Length: 275
Image 1 (cartoon, rainbow, N blue to C red):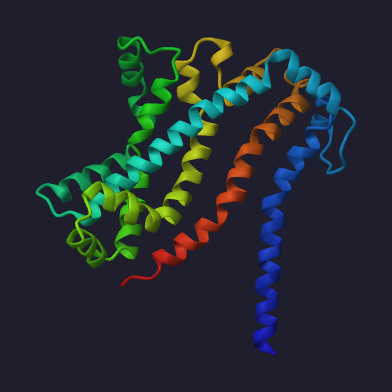
Image 2: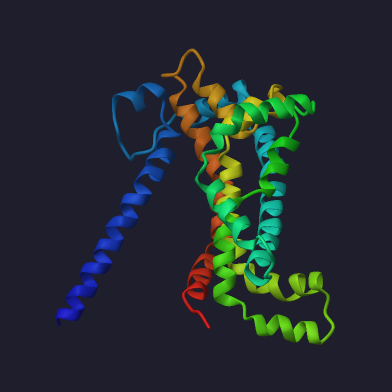
């Protein structure tokens, strides 16, 4: 009986936490249908009647579909590069024994602790020197260097990959790149998918660097475009339009999470078992 009560309390607590997490998202969707004056004067979960007018305001300020395309043009290549090269780096650090290995890993740990904003001025000077201002290249290529993801994948690989499997492949005559692509990557796929979700969300929501690097409005990403709406003269009247634009911008993140969320559980389960 006590066990059943304990289980019921745990489930009740989980339900309360789930509702608490969903309420802000629900409020965002509701406010997307309300006018700015309604949002500023009251809080309610009943949808309003200003969805069409909010959409009109968003359409007048910027082309939201162009912003969608621009964000995808950055997020997808950056995520793929992050996943592939981080996996390759983690594999090298986890499975190869070479001089300076611990030093390289220590440097990666140090860079995990340094805020990226500290190097922003120097980064802009470099981008300006290379004449890459208003280009997507500075927003995609630096994604290769992801120390946090390398750290996670290294720990994940050490927990899931047996060195004996690699030795067996080498005895069979497999080349190192072939081993990485045919054996290691499939084993790492849950961990890579988990990190890719975070990488995609980070690239999709990136605001500061695109705002500094991009100067032409037709190249702005969605977060930068939404910020232009937020900084308009009539902020109160545009509150509903801002909520609508934010609600639309969340859609790709939800889609990615729905398709890849199963890998989070499998990666945690795999990482919890060590040979």
